[in-house]
Amino acid sequence: MKLKKKAFTLFELLIVIFIISLVYALFIQNLNTKPQTDTLTIEKLRDFLLANYYDKNKVSVICFEESKKCKVFINDKDTKDEFILFDEDVNVYYLNKNVLEKKRFFDFHVTNYDKEKVSFKFDLYPNKSSSEFILEYKQKYYLFDSYMHSTKVFDYIDDAKEYWIEQRLKAKGTQI
Image (cartoon, rainbow, N blue to C red; front, side, top):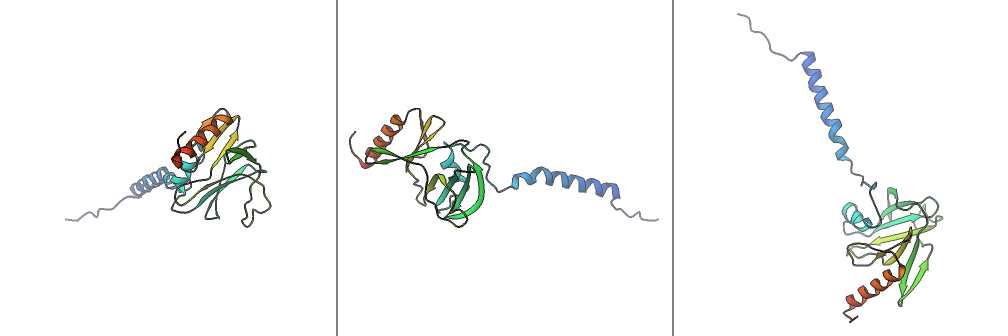
């Protein structure tokens, strides 16, 4: 009696290769390590940086005036990641002795970017504190307070300023 040798046919091998290719194609997009910025908003900027870049390093977002592009830097080194956060000009205000001071452009000295005007700069420090300022964008005022976990949004700059001062007094333990 002759034993019939069992082997896969060419058709069966092609089917297996097709299934493996299909599974690979469906799941390879989940392996993309680049952070998703399509739903990034001003309010979510801090959480976005914490989730995608923070590893006990200084993380900075720098937005350039001319191109409107924003770039992420870790310890002042370019990550090559860029996105658009603003589609029009922004104004940034700092609190100096309870008086708001407007700042139009920021100094940022990193190779290849020295000639570009920086319209927005947000820093997240290793202790998870951050830059403090009020950002004016599209008739809304966004308060970035050093230790707040979320960005507060106000309709009026005076409301943002008052809230900011109250938060500073509370942090110092002063009665309001």
